[in-house]
Structures are given as structure tokens and as C-alpha cells.
Image (cartoon, rainbow, N blue to C red):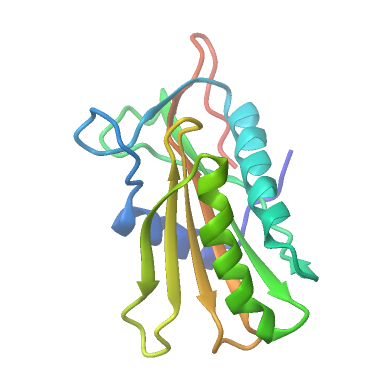
Length: 176
């Protein structure tokens, strides 16, 4: 199906998700909503469609990284029956001057499409990257977008993660 992301990217993304979690409203104590029953392949396709919707909002010329979704565990759940999908990717604008308008556009347009901005502001790094976390309670996804203006090259780093899925009875989670 799809190739695995590099080990470093996977570890960094998994660490980010472990530290930040998914803050979507839900009655569950861990804050991660139940997304329904699905195969990991179908859930990955749905996650990549959500990422594509965010990409469409960027609205400036540039290049997105070639990346693939990966299966991650649902904290505190049976790893043979439950999973989440993480789709990490980056966007490199043609001009670094486009990063500020892109972040403002995303901050304005995501709520019009069912997303709720739950965090926005500088992180604690020496570069003071601007970080935005948005949750879509209806679709059961969360997105973390980081404006990395001082990286070389300047870019947006994006992680889209699903809620927790359950594999259909009689099937196994395909790990990729």
C-alpha cells in the first residue's frame, strides 16, 4: 500500500501527539473521541482527505511534502482492536513572506469549515514558532499546524490525527 515515513519523522510525530494529545471534546477522560469502526486503510484515506481539505485552504503557491499516513495506538486501548491515523506533512511556500498570511487564512477559514481553534500562539522554542491546534468535533480529527519561519527552508509543519477507530470484527489492523 503505502511506504513508511522515516523513523525520525515517526518518532517526532508520535512524541508530539503523545505530549499534546487530541483535545477534541468528548465524554471520555482521555479526550480522544471514538471515530467509529473502520479498516486502517479506509481510515488513512479519510485522514488524507482531511489533510487535503486543509491544503486547499492554504491558497498560496508552494510545495507539499510527499508523506503518508501511519497507524498509531489509542492510548489505554487494546492495540489489536483500536488505532488512530496520523498524517504528518509539510508545506513549503514559494516565498517565506507567505507564511504569515497563510496562518491568518487558516485561523480564519478553518472555523468556517467546522474546526475550532483550541490553541494559537508562540511555542516555547528559541524560534518562537507560531503553533495552532484545531479540532473538528464532527469529523473527529485534530490538526496541529506550526509556522516555522526561521527553519531552512521556511515551512508549515502539519500533523492531522484522527480519533480512535475500532477495527471491524474478524479483521486485523494493517500497520503502515
